Image 1 (spheres, each protein chain N blue to C red):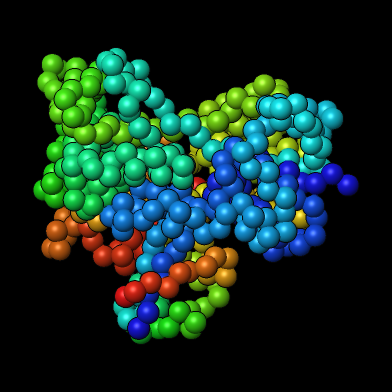
Image 2 (tube, one colour; image 1 turned 90 degrees about the vertical axis):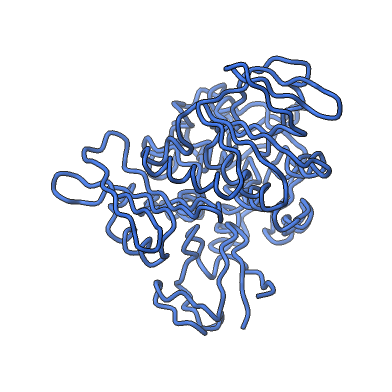
Length: 383
Length: 56
């Protein structure tokens, strides 16, 4: 019988493999990855510099170790070029084919790049996987000043991490406040002030146009004519689900690869989860949705079809200088934000509908107990 | 007392502090945390992953 094939060895692919093995130790399993097959947790990459962690120390196992743990064949440095859903087979870039009984797409997401001019535009780095992290860490070994493009979740976490590692940081975003998609203005501005107080040079409403080489470093030129002399530039603009492979195979694709509550794509025996997937309209590139999806999918793959459920899933922004937990209300939810300043310096923002139901929150500072209480009052994202 | 770090998200559980908001009293040893407990930050179940011991 053809094996179950998982494409992608990131947190999504690895977790579904591990969960499957808890239910089914024997069915042949193949994990295909473009990377080297090391097991690591991507959320750790934006917090690793402060602890002076090498890329190698962030990997809990190499490809051989993963294969042994999972009783699986791990095909590292191999890329799937196409899927033949009729024949239940994938083809690699070298032309070799591999049949599957069930196929799992755990492809992840690509960093969004904004077009930049200048003779050093190619020096802009990104950190989207462990190999990127290894390159980044090496490149900034002697850097004392790093400029980050994009004040979203990853940009803010890297800013704090670089700061803690002893470097100066400029954090740029065209938006008027950071984490614009996750928090309302008042929380965003307070959050920005806290990062600034910790030492991050917050440049909001600013965007880079060109990156040029200068003696001993780089010069970032801004749309408003200003410049920043820096040693390295990190781009953290956002993520775009990897959908090309699915689209070329004729699978339904929207923002992500479209799947139902069983994580089934539009093709038989093909599933998707993690950052590449759109689950009933939800594209949620965070750990908790991924873990819930991996558990449900493992059951389905093992022969007991299970629907994924998303409880309320607050996102913890790992910026120790400004501890923040966010649970944004659903898009289009009716209601308004209320604000409550705690005596401990915390800011609690709650999104409440006309009936008084809590639909979302953002908690800046404050006790973990408050976070737990708020989370319990939230509705499930996908009940 | 020991501390344990979630390998997925970096959450740190310190035995000395416990997690009172989760109903886990200060001083609760890692072994004594219920099997159905999950990491408060990323939702990974206790039994599913390896907390690594770190210097407290």
